[in-house]
Amino acid sequence: MHDANCLFCKIAAGAIPSRKVHEDEELFAFHDIHPHAPVHFLIVPRLHLPSMAQVQAEHAGLLGRMMALAPRLALEQGCRPYPEGGFRIVVNTGREGGQEVDHLHMHVMGGPRPWARG
Ligand code: AMP
Ligand code: ZN
Image (cartoon, rainbow, N blue to C red; front, side):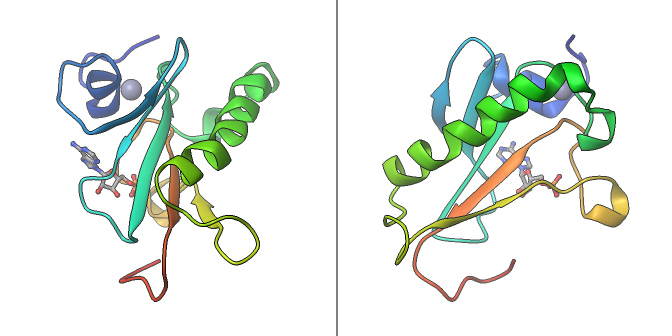
């Protein structure tokens, strides 16, 4: 369920330091090391899934809990409330989808515009 060579498995396990935003039994969230927005953190499952391309019906609950966690963490991290504030959720998938780290992760980005990228 974990890949010994995976950066985000190591971060979720605490073996590589990160700026933690949240952790529970199945999810870990931490600030992106190169933020594209004033608020930019990543939510990852502790389960090593390489990307959205490997998601099966059995993962629906896990993905739903990632989605449900995002709004609460976004507000805690300084995103203003909907509708004036809000945030963007991005899940890059595969090389042509812009994915660089092969452990499924959800980018949550927000804060005052314009952002540098994205
Ligand atoms: P992606 O292109 O969707 O695979 O995004 C990978 C993200 O991980 C990028 O935004 C990186 O800045 C971020 N990242 C890479 N290494 C680390 C790290 N050690 N700690 C936090 N974020 C990282
Ligand atoms: Zn992993």
